[in-house]
Length: 482
Image 1: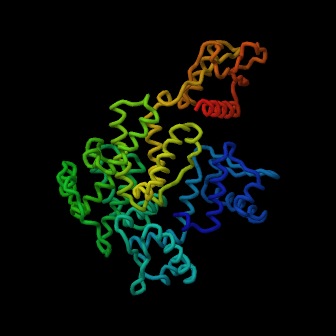
Image 2 (image 1 turned 90 degrees about the horizontal axis):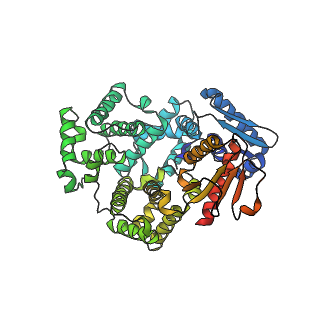
Image 3 (image 1 turned 90 degrees about the vertical axis):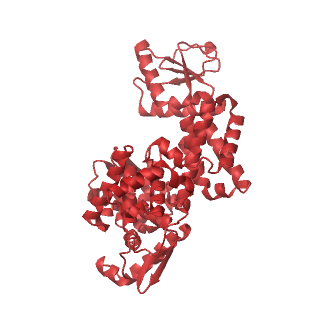
């Protein structure tokens, strides 16, 4: 949805990079690209030329390259730059994003003034105002005009989360807030970090952005909900955090409704100790759904049941549900990533989660219907993290036999273990009746002893294409077992 605010020509470049980097070989034929994006030869040529110009402008010609021959377009990503870098750059230069951020911060006085400041025409500004209005609709937010100035009407939490997301993606806080405000917000978050737990850099950045927005919201006509659960107000974390903020002169965030929201942001960004977070995340959140999920999971895979696993899944699902409820419709702005990796490598879990969500949607479970995509992603990741391959899958038996001898065989075995740890592989010292895969460099095999064993031939040392083909073969073998 946020992509609506990117210039069309920049969006075309971004989508081209995304398409290429999703390919295992980072390349696609020109004919495929033209068909996929409905581009003429001329428009494709212009898009590539502009991308190359961008690489020079952004100073990334050593980290990212786009090349072509008569029929193929390829990219080289050398570890420092991905499509996310380009997305950030294109969002930073977008008139629509700058406009929306100014409106969110109450700094957009009038369309003519914005046009003058950004050296553009009034008609272009009004065109972007229409696009901003469209981008807000899915969040139940509305752009309203009063006495020439614009503001956003709707749920205050959603507005703040939108601001946090935009600031995080664009890194434009420095151009919107004074140095004094930036120092103060960072100081507040540093205090919390010292008193609770180290934060991940991305989470810390989001919390700082939230504090900036919260401290700047005094003039807003939108108000936070005053519905605060009694359990939260009585919690030790609520009391401790309030005292901590008061002791450091941060009165704005100590108001009960503000503190309620701030604690939610801290939980959302994993900034509180696990025990404190569990205390505040009500385990009764969608408890019927949690019980049903666990019941279906252990019915499908009875061999995995343990009381500790049941408790772990219960706690993780409570956190997932809290995040879904707290974030509300703003989850529509969350990144949606490609699930094909999980479908290929965790087929059993992938199918279980998809079936469970589909069944609940069909049963008209409103919570699942509203948050289906978010729940599906996070249920899937939860199970991938909670369940080992051995718990769900029978082993693929592999024998390694290269002419370089035992030390080389051990080297290959260790490398395979590191790369394919999710596939539940059992390494056999020699070819046996139940060997599924034989990995070798020898072409002098006795076919009568192979039975149904699949033989894979490698060069020494293996090339990138050898590894690629090997993993794909194992995935196909895994599917045949499932």
